[in-house]
Image (cartoon, rainbow, N blue to C red):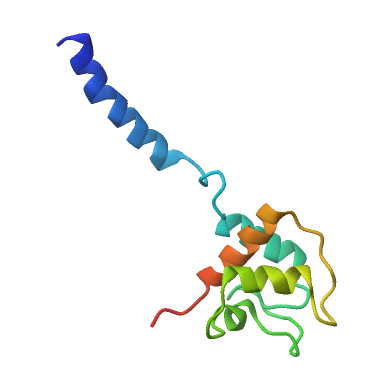
Length: 111
């Protein structure tokens, strides 16, 4: 088998193998990181996942937020950046905001 044939068969397999073990795509929101942020920063007031036992009853759960009709990542990020009382201002990077919004939207019920 010539070098060209080896390269033509090996390189695509290496690329596919690399993609299967790679982490989040750079520049794309990462809902897994968003969940981690939610558990650390938001769980004192919001129910952020179905494993959580307690939260403030006057504050919507992340599932409720995700299922608001017409809800978008942009709307969620705006509500975090410009919170309404009693929500505190939480300093997050743009990437963290996108990750958190992606996690919240991942809780949207299909149908």
